[in-house]
Image (tube, rainbow, N blue to C red; front, top):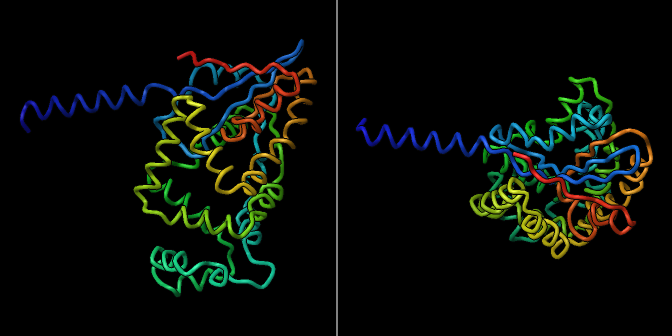
Length: 294
């Protein structure tokens, strides 16, 4: 290898290592009263090894918290029966089939993606939301992201290893009801989006990921909150708005205790006018963004 080639490679490696060494700017907020604090941390459910270690402000929040709270309790996430529950919730309960509800163009794209009409027929019992979700997860994993490295999973494992008290804001049945409750036209829209060219989907996901890493709330809102509200309003209400409202009194109850809590939920739930941060502020509660330290 020529000298300039070696130097160039070393430069690339150095640049890569430097980029990896910078922690994500956290989407972290704090509310406090006389004897307790509640931290709200916006999670990205799939990350890469380069996203760790985390910013010192996040580590400080974890160290300060006596209870770590997730969307689902860790024991529910680790329940081997969860996948079975997902599959059962995904099945049509009214006698319809996948091919009956899909427009011809979406069915053709799905057949091309799955490798033929027979593969689509084998999925006839499943609703579009389930296929769209699995296809999206597959695309993200193929792009190098790992669900076991997601911020929530990271802290679930740490909290259990550290013997910390944990709890969840809802049950798996609550989540499944929100997913399966989407109207069919919105499910079909989501499946159509998932069937777009992989490069287009990855570029869109990368934009969201980089915005999350940069702590850029405006871009995260634009990429997620606004699109959901405009394109799939009922799904947005079920998956975000209504769940946020159910979590609101729980966060207020945490603040009323004498224990500090760290609440880790998808970043989507903290942003926008219907996000938990805005809902708390509308209740007259002061919620401050915690600045990155590193």
